[in-house]
Each structure stands twice: as structure tokens, then as C-alpha cells.
Image (cartoon, rainbow, N blue to C red; front, side, top):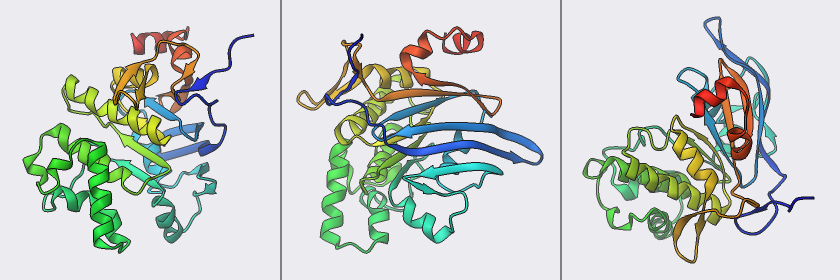
Length: 276
């Protein structure tokens, strides 16, 4: 009998489900985009979503946020079924969710501090508390020195890191990443992925990560963040679970949902060609 897998913090993986898609279908203009999608995300887990353009990856995020309603099936977020939830209730639920948009989506007319603080200012928290939490979030992404700058003064990678700081400042239970390294060079992409690994391992935040970069997903699955050394390290013990799994979409259907090891050992011809 093999060893029981443990997470990077030394504990067995959580069995609590924080996001559940059950037989979800959605179509636009008589074209079915998602066809009976079912999967779930556990607390502390990062699920990396792969698929070619048009396979429905980003649509999953919009459904999970309640921005779109499925034609059929149910979606449960943090124990609440959202497919028929009124907008006012959805607004409250979204406070527990962080979102990192493709291309960062920062407000050009606001400083880094104002961008990161945006959601906290909506909650009318004391200004000093907001500033301290902004500094803490920027410290996490190693950009505290940019607090008074504007987005136009930052590189693409720095803007993406500010977007991550904005997503984590409310200490969300789930984060959705939409192509967090899209358009970035390989070195900068690695820096961003290291932040995602850090967020996963330090705060055990659950995440759904849409990406077209296979390398990002595999790095997430094979690395952990060492808090003592303050850096991302490759996992050498195969019994250590990095709390990362993979979902592959094809033609609106889930064709794979499993671990990195299962993905590498898949005999499906399409999957073997896709990851080669």
C-alpha cells in the first residue's frame, strides 16, 4: 500500500468542495459552447484549465462569477447555488472571490495604490487600514515601491503583479486567473507563476486558472513555495501533493480532469499530441 499523499504544508489534501459545476450547458446563437460540463474544485486546490481557442475556457470563469447563466445544469460556489441567485446576493458572494483579468485591466487614471485599494474603498474602510492592507498586498508581489506610480509607468509584468495584489487584498477564498501570463516573456511569466504558487501555498487559496501556456500549469504542479527560503522550489518527493490538477476542454466538453501524473500518463491520442 502506497504512502498517503500530503500537501506542501504536510497535511492531507482537503476534501471540501468550494466550486462545483454539475452538467452545465451554455449556448450562444444556437451554437452550444459548453456541453454537459461537470467538475469540482477543492479548498486549497489550483485547477489549471487548458484548451484551444474557442473551447470555452474563459466562459467557465464568467459562469462561476455569475456574469453568465447556464442554459441548464447547476453551479455551486462556496456552498451556494448561484444559477438562480439574485444579483444583490451575487454581489455579496463576489466579495469572497478574487479575479485577475487578462491584460490586467487596471484603471489608467488611478495610481497603483488606488487600483489595489479599489474594492476596499467600496466597503468604506478607514483610510489608514486600507493603506496598510495595500502595502501588505504590494509587499506580497514585491512591488511596494510602486505604490504612487500609475499603470503607464509600469512594465507589463509589473501591471500583472499589481492585478494580483488587487485580487488578493480582500483575502478571497477563491481566485480566478484568466491567462495571467498572456503576452509576457518567459522570464516574467515565471515570476508571475511563482506568485501564484506562493498564494496557493502560503494562504491555501483555491484557484481556477485558465491558460494556454502548458509550461505554467506544469510548473504549478511540480513546484512549491518554501517560506523559509522565500522562493519557489521543485518538488523532489512524488508523495508530496502540490494541490494542482488539470482540466482539458475540447469542443465544449471535459476530456480530462485529473493530476499532472495522470495527464502525463494519458493514452488519449488528442491529449498526448496536445501536451507534447
